[in-house]
Amino acid sequence: MITLYPLQDYDREQFIKDNQEAFNYGALEEFGMRDNHFEEDEQIISRETIGKSIDGGEAYRIMDDGKPVGGVIIKVDGDKGDLDILFTSPKVHSKGIGYAAWCEVEKLHPEVKIWETVTPYFEKRNIHFYVNRCGFHIVEFFNSHHPDPNDPDMADQIDEQFPDGMFKFEKRMK
Image: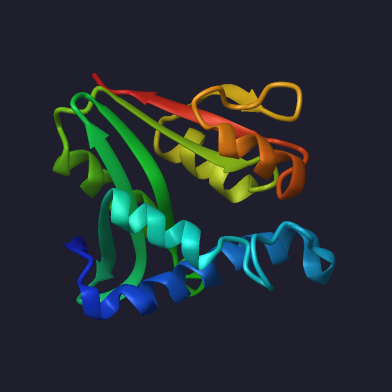
């Protein structure tokens, strides 16, 4: 039974560590130890990035039978939603937990008509998950020749951290 619980202050530190572990797993799986996609020392996503996301959105722990197995951070503005971060522990990959958590997010905000998110080009698991499992569509490819016009900071990240670009996904709700 997958449920979402609002992130509590006492769990913030562990949430950040769990998020970093999950994101590092994907990068190391793709690139091995030669990876150079890190925001800070040995972290694909920095504490600062995760902290800003938590502070600027709605953060939830993904719970499986009362045990934390991941997390999700969303931002909702009227009928537009942004999936900022979604992660599950590498120990529970391919068990349907991410999909079940996404379904719970959709139930939390039935007013949202369009959900958006981004993921690096190399995250094949994420691309499969968003497109084939959750029903998102790739609508844009941000790269050094086409940076995200709504996120000027992303241009620097694409050049430094993700030189091969990021996919933008969109899901239109019925």
